[in-house]
Image (tube, rainbow, N blue to C red; front, side):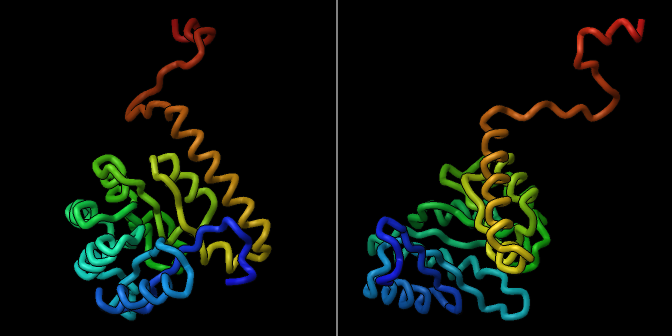
Length: 200
């Protein structure tokens, strides 16, 4: 910890916890070691697919929020679970895009969009983001942020890939704020007034 620059916010992770109680214990230890009040909750009893246990995650979120932690729970995207996490005191909701480490992108895109539309907390897309273009897409959808690890850590040039993700995230956010153009399901609509005469 002594080598971490001043002003950096640490985000301890309860990865490895299989129950709410184990996650709470890890979070408390991290706080005692000087890591601060932020904590990312990861609770996975499934060792094959590493899918989060939403029920245990809700329990841990409530327990830690009551102790003053800033809780960022990793969850399988489900609107009812997200609402329960809001009620439990979560500071943000972190739905998975695809299984951890898979680099498959936004496999749960439709469900993530529902959370973005319905939950009044920051939505941080976590797990599965494999390319900068996928990070940009998540930001275009209205996500507050994305978390990328494997995509960067396994890249041929880690520093360059991290920079590419930075640019993609910034571009996606700017596109969202600008307001994305409409999508036409069928046919075409002339976008330039100078081409309309061609159809006369």
